[in-house]
Image (tube, rainbow, N blue to C red; front, side, top):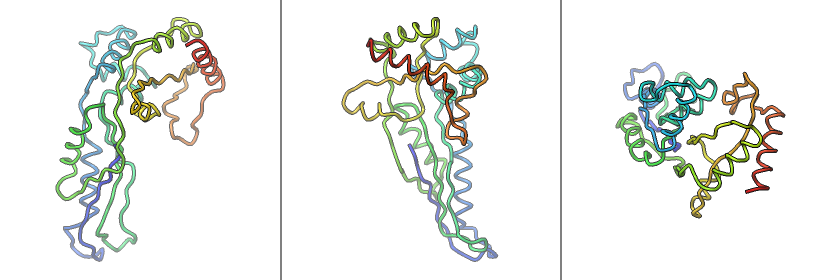
Length: 235
């Protein structure tokens, strides 16, 4: 869910004493929402994922908490840790036009990612955090999906990956981004993501996302082409 926060106040000269300041209201709301500590919430998918990762790490998931298990995965923790929580990240601020003029409106954009089924409870909490003087406007709302991790396609993925990278485990994962599977779900199609990349050690792939140097090593891309080609030819 993408929302816009809108705060309104009294426009005035910057030298005046103005308690009804739109920027101050917005800043407080943004700080509360961006600083919210959302609790761990495991679904069937993430519970299975944490259990398998804990097994690889040789720890007991009932003793070592889900957050600790996720953070122990190194660069992959950027994906795994986010899949265990709602996230509410402020991304854009807009207010004013001149240094000495207090604006009557201030706006902020917030990127919200929550687990399927949690949308209404998360939105209610965000409205509570925003406060009575800040309006919460829904800019975009997509479909939250979770599929059972099993069936012929998952079996085929295990088989093809085993041929190209013997011993590589296949774990369920709940992606915190959007794919075409959301649209396909409206047609009754259960979709799964599978993007095989055999990354070299030391490459922090998640850190490159939407960065100025976003890239994929050519050998990793070639590996993915071979695996996906095999899957399409045999499934």
